[in-house]
Length: 254
Ligand code: ADP
Ligand code: MG
Figure 1 (cartoon, rainbow, N blue to C red):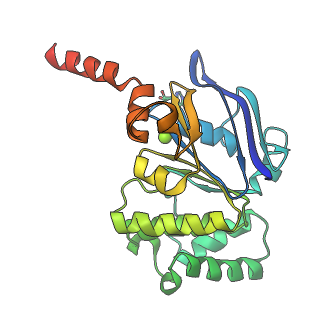
Figure 2: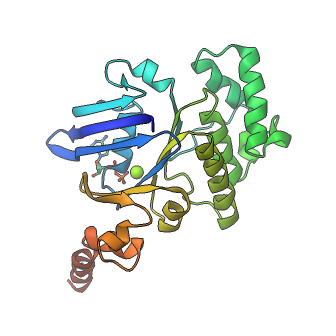
């Protein structure tokens, strides 16, 4: 299998504080890896270093064998990003948002328009090409951000908590689209708070806490390997949920 993403000993310091402490993993074409972890664990920071929007303190990231630090622009050509916030230009229509993003990749306008039409059809937004983005529902906005992230035909899609805040139907539509992309050979790296999302999408899961991977393996066998009844139970154990809930109790009684 072709390795699309290779992350080695990735580290991020904010001053004296270590947000990501030596994280390593790789991801092959057509595979999905989920990063699961509590708030503040370092998930978003890890992703931001991979898509070259925050400097790497230590370690390396290679996308399609391109070093992200040495050739950020070339690496970005192979990535599509769905960030936590939609960051849609509210003064532009759905189609204009697609075009504006395509231009960033130096894709000729005619080609951007062709791709935008077919991507908007893929995410079910054909009838909304001329709509203002402010008139879209939460689920539609997320699908537009996904379509936009695909304009440069990425080999790797990176999604930070892609379905947080969506209703159940919208989540399932979004999952379906990601699974279609996966079948087309796209590699998918996502963070999530939802175990059901990870089970629906991911082949592998890395559980991260305090900037370190504390458990990793196949989504279907990790729980068994850790002798836990479910992935959620395994997650709670490796992130020391018991100790944390005692701390919460103590603060309540103080
Ligand atoms: P997650 O996405 O897992 O919730 P983040 O990667 O956003 O966590 O943050 C990891 C840690 O790094 C947190 O403790 C957060 O407060 C800290 N952090 C994130 N961004 C910055 C920043 N720009 N400056 C200082 N600390 C930061
Ligand atoms: Mg985050």
